[in-house]
Length: 165
Image 1 (cartoon, rainbow, N blue to C red):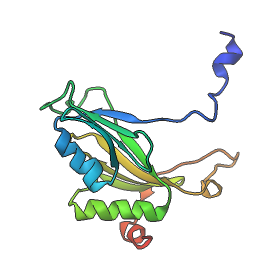
Image 2: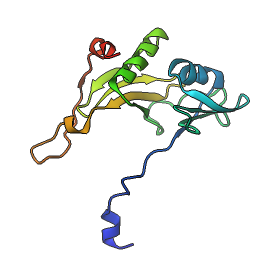
Image 3: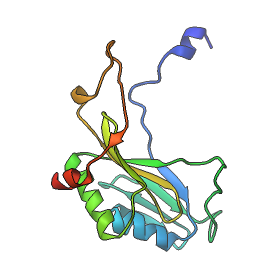
Image 4: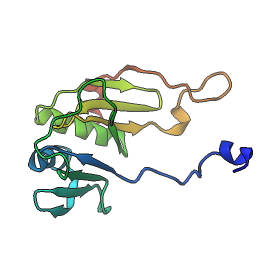
C-alpha cells in the first residue's frame, strides 16, 4: 500500500450498521430496548436472540445470550464496549426518549451539551453504556479560529429538553 493510500480518509458514505450485544437475560433486555426505548422486534430466535429496529430496517440492535446467558457485566478495568450511541432525528424525539426513561424510572449517568449534539447517558440492564443523542444542525457546530470543529462538554438542561417535546 502506498503511503498516500494510508493517509486517505475513508469513503464519506461509510456508516455504522448495527450493534450486537451479549446479554444475560433476553426478556430483560427486550423490556429495555423494545419496551422503554421503543425499538421494534424484527425477528426473534426463541430465548436466544432478537433483532430490533427503528423504522423497519432489518436490525439496528442485535441481542443474544449465546455466550452470556446468566452472565455478569465485565469487571471495571477490563476492555470492551464503552457505550453504544443511538441518534435521534430531532431534539423533540430525544425529549420523548427522556420522557420514556423517566416514566420507566431509569436513572441517567449524565446529560451533556457537546456543542455538536445533546446527549443522555445511561446503562442498560446488562450495564452496557448507552448514549441517546441528536445532532445539532451542522451550521451551529462550534468551530475554532481555523474553522475546525471545537466540541465541548457542558451540562444539559433536562427541563428545557423536555419542553422541546
